[in-house]
Each structure stands twice: as structure tokens, then as C-alpha cells.
Figure 1 (cartoon, helix red, strand yellow):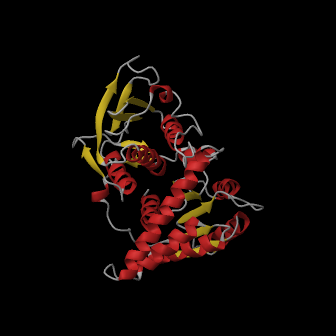
Figure 2 (cartoon, one colour; figure 1 turned 180 degrees about the horizontal axis):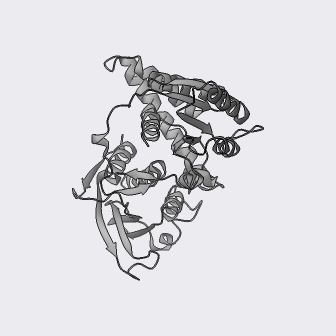
Figure 3 (tube, one colour; figure 1 turned 135 degrees about the vertical axis):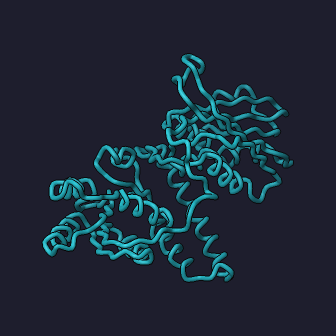
Length: 350
């Protein structure tokens, strides 16, 4: 549902002048949709789902974006300190946004009178046994420090426990999900606090081999292209919205509602000597043939087929280890027009 909503918002923005008041309302709706996505992902972290779907990212951009959003409307000022040569990281951006969001909200709530939150990141090389929970290697260390009321010593050992909270309206999921996410990324998270002096949260993420992860400011507009795409999704709303997004990007689109229909369309296109350049498959099709079985059939027909998997759930190993399953790309729902354009362009160019 969120994929259909976000897709239609993206399409609406294409037809509205950025100076039009309606564009502002659409942007607000887009932001609310992304917040709903983050909440859903947070719940998935504690269910059978939650495996990170990683890609190279600029941790500095993730921090700035999430911190400004989380502190909006408060009396808190976020100060950022990042070195120009900060290493990139390979992470699930949505999940790391959750971590930063939860830590910032915790700091904001601990600073009812306002003040400053100092957010920094640095490159760290750990040797053997330097940190008990981490092997040697290159890491990016992120620190978030507030000057609020602090955390009592008797609570420090419990703050990462699911459902532990001292707040009347708290769920106890925020810091627990942050801990779980960082662990699943191969890192660790620590906390130091003193009453009336503030709290320092630090988390470590393995550095990416790609040191030149593109920053947000360098991102280019949605890339248009040409080609024939087979799109399979069992949700009619998602199928329609994604089809329109692809058409707006310049692609010819044939839609299918399940795996059987997708395989038939693929075979027919080959017979007519008008093959598909890319296939996008929804992983989960209740009561029908999903992406996993469809992928297997397509690979038997054509071992070189370029398939992108799409899903709102990450409990399958296909989602978190898509390269090992001979996929060319992965789209995590809900995805924006830019995400869709970038993924398809990269697969076509590979």
C-alpha cells in the first residue's frame, strides 16, 4: 500500500510545478509516507524480517537528513562534524535512518529545555581485541552527544532491551531496534551517561570497500532510458503506479499479476524476437507463483536474463543476499521514482 501511495505521489510531483502550493503538500505527503515506511520497518525488525538490504551510501548524508527530520519542531540545534575523507559504508539506508532517528529522538526528549546535540563521525581502524564485540578492520564511528538530563546507572544496562522504557508514552522499541539493526550490520553500539551532564551514544559500522560513495548533494535527477520491461506484481495499485513511473522514464512496459503470467509473457516476447531488456519481479505473491519460483524458471529459459527483485519484506535471503541468487538488482518497497530510475539504469548498463 505504501508503495502505491509513494509511487502516485512521485507521479503527481512530475505534473506539478515546484512553485505551486500543491507541490508542497505532495512533498509533505511523501515525507509522511516515508515515516510510515520507517515505522513498518521498525516493527519488522522484531519479527522474522529485518535483514538489511545493503548498498553503498554516504553516512554523513544519512545522518544530516535523519537528524534534521527527527529534531524538527524542537528547541534542539544539531551540530555536525564530519571529516572530508570520511569512508563510505555499505548499509540498508532505511534501517540506519531508523537508528539515527531513534537516537536523536532520545536526545531531544532528554533535553526538554533545548540545547545542542553534537553529531560527529570519524574513520577508525580497530586491531585485534581492541573492542570485544568487533573483529579487526576499518570502521566508521558515529557519535551523538547531548547535554540533557542523563540516564540513571541502574537503567543503562536495560536501555537496549525490547519494551524497556521509563517514558509514559514510550514503547521501548526505539533503542532496542537501533541495537538490533547495528548488530545485523556487523557493528556495535555503546552508551555513556551521567546524570545532569548528558548522554553519548556511539555506534560503529564496517567501512565500505567503495570509498567514493555518492553523497546526496551529488545525486542526479531520475535517469531516463529506453528499453522493454516486464513488470510483475500481484497488487493492482502497485502494478499500475510502477508501470506509469517506468513509462514516464521512457520505458515500454508489459505488466503481469503473477509469476505464471510473467513467464508466459517472457516466452511470447522471445518467440516474437522482441525480448525484454529487464524483468522486475515481486518476491511475494500470496496464493500464486512469486518472484523466487519465477526467477528460477526465467534463468532456465535464459541464464543471462536481467532480473530485479522487488519486495516490502526482507525475511527472505533473496532480499538481503540478492547477488548470490543471480539477481541484477533489488528494489525495497516503497521506492521513489529516483530509486527506480537508478536501479533500472544500472541493470541495463551492466
